[in-house]
Image 1 (cartoon, rainbow, N blue to C red):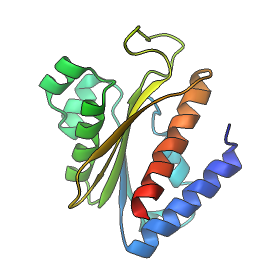
Image 2: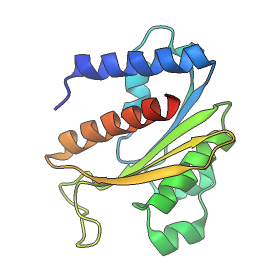
Image 3: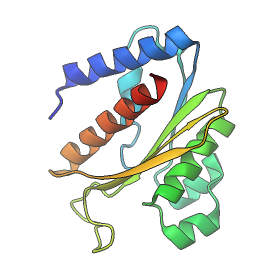
Image 4: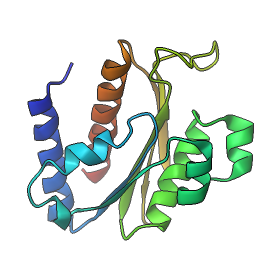
Length: 163
């Protein structure tokens, strides 16, 4: 599992990539509870490339703050690529950012179902002028391990999309 120092190094690499392209980042987080935003703002000077973060834990917050469609939440659930895409699109629309990442999942130890087990996390990356991309991952471990792996996957996904 990635240590805090490695998380900080990953955030620094992400910041350098964003800054060199003149891009601003926004985050939309549910199960990570703002951990991505906290990680990127550990980097001095992050105000040059980080605009804002949305922590939208409840379905109501996803709708109110990010404009996620109620029908999307009803039909697919909070933990779905459809909801993650809506969150990422909303983060772009409600910020000055050029690129956004969204994460929603089941960190456990409770809340899992057979179709959406503990460790299932959905991600989306939205960028101005590009198609929204999404992915679903299954992570193992306790609540903190699942959340930490989600933060890493989200930031690595951003870096991949900036290459």
